[in-house]
Length: 294
Ligand SMILES: CC(C)(COP(=O)(O)OP(=O)(O)OC[C@H]1O[C@@H](n2cnc3c(N)ncnc32)[C@H](O[C@H]2O[C@H](COP(=O)(O)OP(=O)(O)OP(=O)(O)O)[C@@H](O)[C@H]2O)[C@@H]1O)[C@@H](O)C(=O)NCCC(=O)NCCS
Ligand SMILES: Nc1ncnc2[nH]cnc12
Image (cartoon, rainbow, N blue to C red):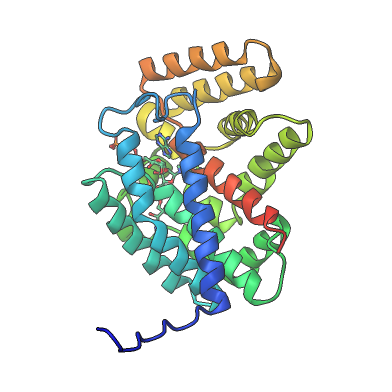
């Protein structure tokens, strides 16, 4: 109304400003993973890979639904929230993702690992620490390590309640829970070093991400691969990734053709390394947080 002063918006606190920045980086990391091509068996902007129930639009809806979650969990970390509170935010985010995708699990692994990283970034920043990879991991383990370890111990009522738990019971392999309990070793010991090495030798961002995805596929016990194709599928994924890396990865002149060939054969076998894809996004987030230099 003319002549009436509009109420001033309350100033954003440093925590709110930082959490918004971290959430943008988390969503961007998931977007970079989605756009990357060729990724063996995985959904991209080009095709649906080994998936007939989801495409790039499903992933876009999913990652858009997660933007407030990443902001909230970063703020919770800043406020030194207990693990139960982080977990509840993750459960709510899974529900939002499933509403956005009409019931399809696009980002459950990412909600867990990138969520923990956003919380750790918030906690580190509140304590005046830099968001370098080593600090993020130390904060994650020191603040929530014990609770993450007990989260990894499956209670009888939970057994067989998810693909990951069914796979763990059937093949005695680890998955997202163990990753969390150990402070995301695949991210800090495989993904981030692979990104750093590729960047240091002057690789483009795209090539650095392709090489990192392959390094993760060669290393990770991916419950999504076991769920779809058992130990034989897991062996094929590891073998393809090790072969690609042994040839020099994206330094090989024919890397694109090799990766396309892998993509086609993964699709014909319905293989999908979704866990490695999530961990690639998590590694990109750690690299981006480190690059903020704060
Ligand atoms: C800890 C949880 C994430 C629970 O995990 P759980 O052990 O119960 O297993 P899943 O529910 O199966 O989910 C685990 C997802 O994690 C990804 N993943 C797989 N291996 C690893 C690994 N070694 N390290 C890290 N992450 C890994 C993987 O995500 C990708 O696969 C998805 C597709 O999965 P799925 O639906 O099984 O596949 P389809 O083939 O489509 O199945 P069908 O339709 O054919 O049946 C894809 O979306 C990727 O994201 C696994 O899916 C967690 O649920 C939990 O405790 N949550 C609490 C809340 C929370 O997240 N809190 C966060 C802060 S604490
Ligand atoms: N691009 C992708 N395709 C299939 N599953 C995934 N999980 C995470 N990212 C994925």
